[in-house]
Length: 434
Image 1 (tube, rainbow, N blue to C red):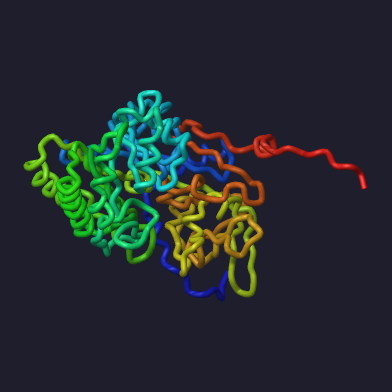
Image 2: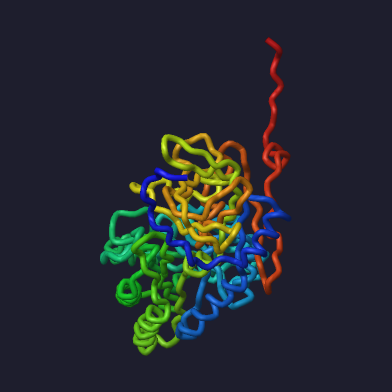
């Protein structure tokens, strides 16, 4: 196999992945495509972070990163609270065993049913309100009496080390800081809900320690200023998070220990002035991203005009992040061969999925060992924003199976969609014969 273009670097050559022999067994038992989450690795990552952070900082898992019930339950068993953003996420968190005081509910477009659910059944620690209109709507609900509210502020200051900025500019998220500063009348007019603090989230995929610390200090400063101007207590301050995972060439992993040390210093200074305040940090991708592998099986290996392709059984429909939909430039997630796992990477392939779109490219011009039909490939660092953030119904392929490995044993934690699963919600209307 010769005459191929020079490949992109394959950053996944030495990437963490669950034991390849175990993954091969799981693929045989449950089929492919398949998500494998290494719960033992996830546990170690959480425990390391918990040891690094000041014990006065509560870690809340951002469930949107991976809403699998068993993944959430594992994190809860380790001590994490949960941040949820939909009614189903709220119910999932409760089924995972999370107490109401370790739940917060945020999102810019909550429905009345979601707001009521935050007030019922023990409620949540707080509803994170993202507009003054939402604050008024919640306060108008009879069920909301005594409900605690945290105001999400869109700060005036910006962050520059985030791969996706969510503050400092016009955003659907939160209430602009300058608007909140003039909202004392709206706050004092509340009848049922009680404001207990401030929340801000500046961005995601942050890989720079200085940016993490800058954001933390900025959020604490804004919270202190707003509390004074609005006359509200600081029982809770949510400093956000957004700690990242490096996926692409020339990205360096965030030094979590150094980031935690910087956060600890900022928090300690703040708590010297407000010793009774609960500090929350939200982390999703940083906790679960490294622990997941998207396992594909090669169906065909073909050549097209001098370039070799591996056509696999999964792609955009399960892992839109790896495909890079919405990105200006296609960049490859780490990918490696799992059969065999340690063979030298001597060949160059573009790895695609089974979908009828030219965008369905998992990895472009990556160096791998020679791939044959039936071989397994693993897209690593895939524990966050996988199937739940992908168009799983495209071409009606459905949701893949998901397996969580705990203490070296694989547990099926999400069944693969069957044809009947996909067709069951649909209804065929009677049509007259033509």
